[in-house]
Length: 355
Figure 1: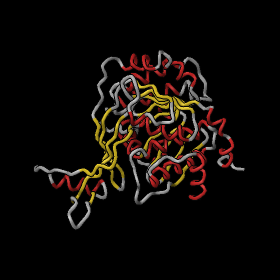
Figure 2: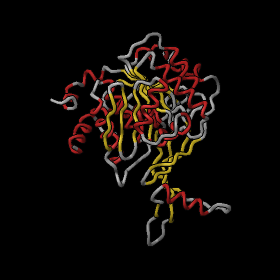
Figure 3: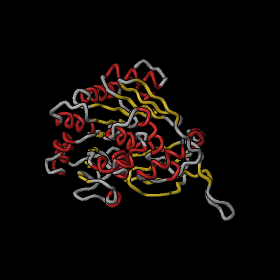
Figure 4: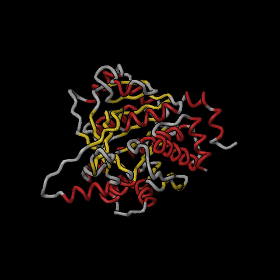
């Protein structure tokens, strides 16, 4: 029996794996910008790709324009909710410390299969969907007082213990929250031992608007986590290329970027995932795998977070590197093509269908 086939019989073990995720949380409005409004004899026609929409906007330079948005859904958003919902749906014990409500969880988050510690109201974002990706519009979130104090209050002072005991600690969305770096530093301080059998997983989100010094600082911070946990950094293609251009040598090969990040910052493992392929670079070597591209996605918002959710699952379950990519790619493919998170049984069936 393969390691993947054996997962169906390891449900009790899965349920015993504890993941703690911090610290964002958004309410997303999912829209499609319209190239042509609906008429009596024709349906609305959305812009097909980001390039097409971008060229339309360039054509309006030094002019004005309006864009009609076709609203498709209002739902939970942000890296933490998507990752947590995906991981919890696979059976992991997930605790979320996030911007999920002021005192009590807001409605979009209440159905998440997780323990919730809301410390602030959710941010508001608009996600413009296209066939080849998304454009996310969101403002920075202001808090009424110190973020770490809010986190401690929301957890009854238990945040350091939750971090310490987690089999995997996932810190996400560093780029979009001005206070995230400080929260990550407090989290590192809470880890009072070195246990490389436990994991710390990181998703920076789009770092394009951050300075070179800020990017260098957060990568060094993740290297600090690597002294206490097995640190995993997950980058999409845009993030990997931006990191390379800003703090490395500007190489564009994803394998070279992953190796350079590991070497320069002491990060144990680097994941790079693109729409066409993925790789995992570890002390054991480098594993590549093509993804299964979806020509007509049901949804792309949250695709990377679902890849990360399954990556966290595969890491804590001790799967071999190749199986970790297989699980992550299949989980993301199911979500993009079907529009919802698969259960463990659905995931294992989907992996067989794709093979």
